[in-house]
Amino acid sequence: MTTYEVSRETLEYNIKQLKAKANGVPIWAVVKGDGYGLGVLPLAEVLAEQNIHHFCVTELREAEILRDNGFTEDQILMLRSVADRKEINRLLDLKVILTVGSEQVAALIDQIAAERADIAQVHLKIDTGMGRYGFLPEQTDQVISLYREKKHLAISGIFTHFNCAFSDNELTKQEFAAFMRVVEQIRAAGQETGIVHCCNSAAFLKFPEMHCDAVRLGSAILGRIAFRTKLRPVGYVSTAIEELRVLPKGHTTGYSALWKAKKDTPIAILPVGWYHGFHVSCEPDMTRKRDCLRAALGNIKAMLRPKRVTAEINGKACPIVGAIGMLHCAVDVSGIACKRGDRAILQMNPLHVKGIKVVFRK
Ligand SMILES: *Cc1c(COP(=O)(O)O)cnc(C)c1O
Image 1 (tube, protein in one colour):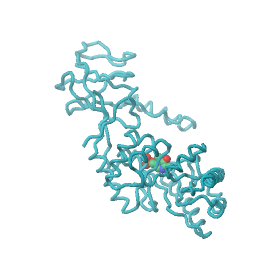
Image 2: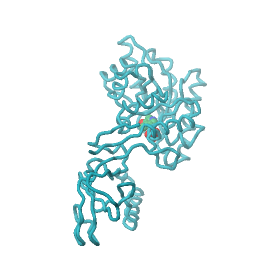
Image 3: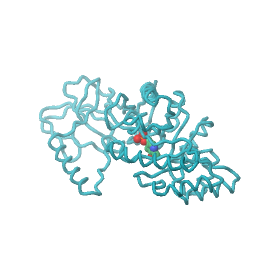
Image 4: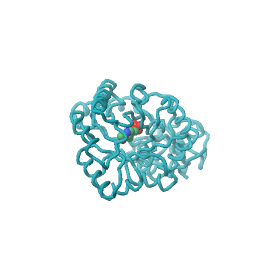
């Protein structure tokens, strides 16, 4: 049996670390992408046990799952604009806070709320560089007039989302400054902004001065951050050796015969492949010349020093050999005491996991 194992203890450890660092600033847990692959509900349940009662989603379905399963009083923020009237109505039924990032969206939500004699809770989105949703800083006058004109919107927050917090500290500081200027102008015009928030995981960990009134954390909760932290990665694939054999010297394994036995070699076959998300990487972004160049250099580097992909079998890291297949991979278990049916552990980000049951353990 193959499962994706999630340790509650590790999740709790990460949440405690993050809470300590937040120092009283509320954490809004982002549970988009089906809870980053762990499942919205099991993840939210662990978060709730740790007294986290604010959630961010990007799909109506995620909000429904929370509301249908006892998360009735928790605050839920929809992080993106919604264009569909039915969907907006449903989100208002569920008392989800909506995001307003343009005059059109403000007008539509205001109108729908008026039709249902309701007041829509909303947060305003400022676009400081991501370029997807949000008012540009130059449109602050438009933003200020929303507070006065839209009688059916209760504007209880304002936020931005950094596009380079992982990679570019200077740019992130500039974006933060631009965001805070918008906030200051709104206040100078005599309006209450409600809660101000801008940090995702990377910005939260790097820039305590940007924590403001709330922080929106996703990947940090799973301990999967591109730089070194005290957080622990949550989750791994647990599978079993389905076949164990000795391939004679000169024999190959896998498609394209990329690996050939230099000597008689014991090989364990695991029923996990790229279909399940094992060792799939995101396509590099090739829209700019310099990205193409960087990808080409990366390929040369990988050629000179191939990255070792391993499986852990009986406590030992064993190299995956040959091409990873759609549903299988082969492991060189030279010098490892093992037999068919023994457990093998593969490291994998749950976001990539497909067709494997996620199981929460103690
Ligand atoms: C995904 C997302 C987050 C959380 O990002 P992490 O880097 O996973 O912490 C925060 N805010 C918005 C708007 C997002 O879309």
